[in-house]
Length: 469
Image (cartoon, rainbow, N blue to C red; front, side):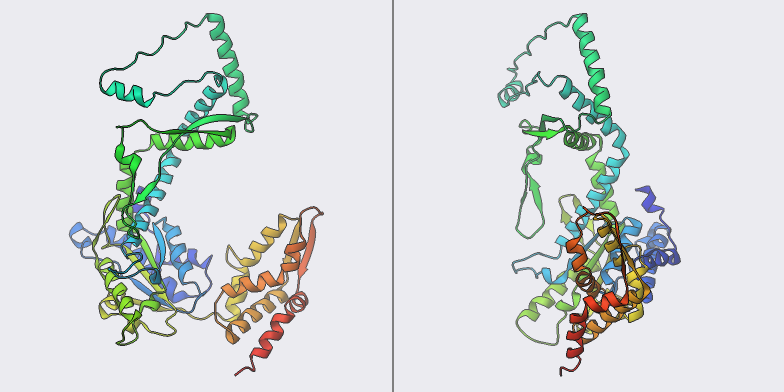
């Protein structure tokens, strides 16, 4: 994890990376870029000052589909930080049935453990590959010889000193040894060349058991097999799989043996506490709207429960205690029916940075359709190329689609960039349905006339809606 500790992207570099995927919203990008850079600045301070510098949490305000979640998600991917997105409406205050707010921290550490474990596995990839290959070779060469695993009786017998001596192995002649070596070399060559990938073999895989939740909704789980440790023999189950599948299974098992899970957990805890990002969506839905009874009491209760996490507290997880003092919290909401001032004052104070995201304009839609690395037009072009259809979007079509997306958002519910998914599905429905890959490559140009013809019903409906009072 040393690479993460030395990560020192400047705010300008962070914004430049975000610009590749998100159009506009400059203020929000600047806010998260500064928050991320401040983490690096804090890491360079003396320890006595470090403890005093806490993250400046952010609230993003803006309609759905304008990039709030995407900014936070891309930010976490940029620095490979543990990241989770939670919805404030999924939590209930203590005493009510449902998820408690501390489960978001437990989900975050789970994410961190997975990230660190994957990195450790990559570092032992070649060794694990070689060990998996050896196991496959042993099975293919001697699959007619069944080596029985110790039974529960033998294991218990060994505990009480009544172990049964293993049967003496028959002595191998030089000719048999030479034949075995020759066969092993031949099988190894075929295995390395992938000629045996489709051959089915029977393997034994360890049955890891299932996790049991200690308290429903708490997120605290235990694994009974882990608790029993080495007292009882490990359980195995037989599976018939192809050599290719067995290689993947064996590689995962061998990689798991090579990495130190205690070290993984320690690094994951450190990564969570220093680099974790929790994105709380729909926070406006738990904002109280004046003094009232009923559900609003529960909403304010959730706010009070979230407050200690944002202020800094210690949460117990199955990987150890996690301090939330330096986790970056980013909250977001549309705030159509409420405002940030409707949150309890203590929670408002813990989100000092407030950023308003703008609704998307026609020009924004045009850029979203073409500029990002994952632009929706590029996605559809790639999808249909699989079935030998090459799409070409002309500028007139892009303008028409952008104009229509903006118009529909203005006259109906504003769902931001998500509107483009609906429009593109309607626009390309006939092509997507009829393309089957059995024909030669077809080049189709999508122009403004094509858009008008295939979306005329949608355009007509929206023209009528303009006059509905």
